[in-house]
Length: 309
Image (cartoon, rainbow, N blue to C red; front, side):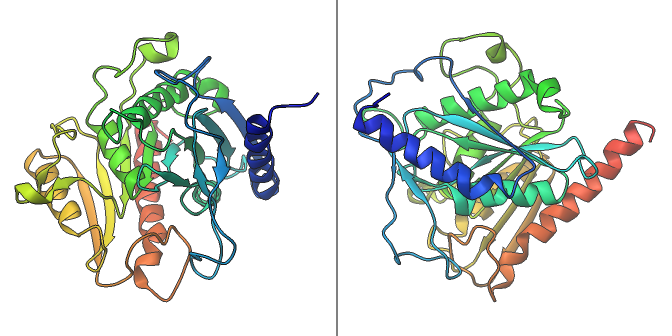
């Protein structure tokens, strides 16, 4: 069968992504996020493709995938080895300024690391760039709400605990994760199926160098799309003082969480900038995965104790 050029390009990206990652994950399953077209899609944004140029923008000396023009969102399920599996899972939201997705740096590599500590990684390939006439996060938030609900709805199939599903986001993906944590009471799209009838509230959140959490022009007041309440999920955050998206994002958001009595953990490092993912460098901030692993060990002990183990 001969496919149109746009479909061939999308398939090529998907196949390359699969080949790169399948050998590193015990189980790899890619499923469509929506049973048909995503809400409001018109098929007019161009072909999905990696926009990176050879040798440019290396992170820790390595290239990365900058996936653009995503109109067909997917979930990719990475399962840990059975002898390590804790039952916890995390929906991973790559960053990219709501323009592209850093698909491996802040996506597949993170899911593989989650597997190494016994956590199922669920990579969300959400829609980018922002849709014309909509807020930057509108389409992406629809995808994130759908993703969390779908994972919880199919928890038994995926072999995970429906009460231990978190979200982890980087940069714009951190903003998206925070938006999901504060906009779960009602879907931002018409109900599609039974997956949209279960809660899409994450049980916890990990935000790594998030952007857009506060409004600079309003004395770093928390962004209006992030209506924090006492039911906002427990949140872990890591950022550096020299991050170009401004540490005030972290400080303002965390202060609001504290005032709402939301459990939180904040790690601030002096240097390291932005966009390092979990690739280790000489910068101490790149040890943040160790702190998250500590968090998982504590919560796993608490979960085992509650279960009477």
